[in-house]
Image (cartoon, rainbow, N blue to C red; front, side, top):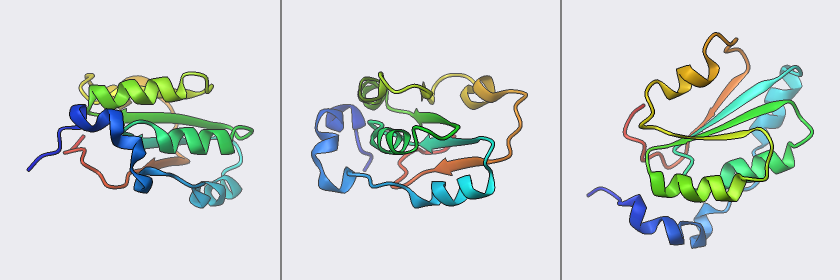
Length: 122
């Protein structure tokens, strides 16, 4: 059985399991790589992880990107994160979406966050 995220998007954040705390792994990575890191949230859903982390680490040099296959979930992610500088929300259906955004860039210090992944492959 496959989850229809378009149907559950309006109530997705009401589930207490969706609450995200600060990701301490990012702090560890920042200690090693002071210049800049990039965080890609695969299957970002409504963007809760991105919002929580980007607000907490707002003074750090971090580029944030959320990627999801559900257009409905992405609408919520975009709305939730619209006032936060440095977050990009992308639709998985876009051609070569990750390559387009960071083509030719140095891929050192890159973090991928993915939990409860219903992504079905990138």
